[in-house]
Length: 333
Image (tube, rainbow, N blue to C red; front, side, top):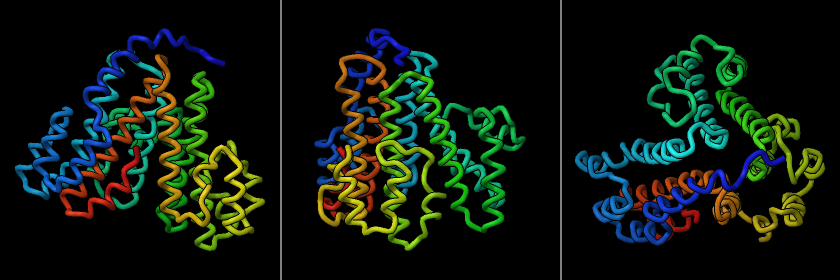
């Protein structure tokens, strides 16, 4: 049931559209950056959009690459801070930012297991301050993230130690993250957010299915690896097709709402990954097509994440001297 009024988001919708119009790095700008093959040109184009990389250039080409992640992470933080400054604390923003809390949690678990400092792996983009998260993790605080931090830390460290497989950390934390988000979506009343994350879970499971099949893994391996949410494609459907050909699996998917992803015969894994990103980005564009409402807030933030990913691709190409045409293929509109 809807628990919000669209009109409550009229002011923030107008503000964010104005900011996006002024600062968004669109596809044409990215192409100019890639075609220029010039760091100076790239920096000039980005500075016109309010993204300043000049300080990194003083350290040479290596400086640009070395500081790129930090600068772009800060750009994302600025977007979240802007939204929060307008609407204050919001379940919308919290549900998006919690992904970074879990990203940091994975870093803390891996660092403890390896006996190294986690600081170089942490990003200050989550709901929980890095100090609070580090303290809570160290003390196994059973209140932090409704007890998830403690339970995930204990389970992940135990399994990784017993199996010798550090990927168990990602598996356990990613499942817990989706569980946390989906429960939050259901109680928030934001149906469009549930639609987005349900599709993301479905399509993540599709990729896990394909990789398991190509690796020759048994069904039990897939069931263990899959996220605990199944929307358009049920767990039973995955089971039914596990021992059939991938072509039959793709044909089944071509009869679902994900048909455009699997319309081609024998698509490559990379092509499927790109089309999945395009599908999710289309859901974001759908949010942004609303005149005003909470959809605009989520569309702005998720759109900023995609934009930053594209900037990283474009700049890495210029700095590393990669083929422009192949780089353009990687951009997701």
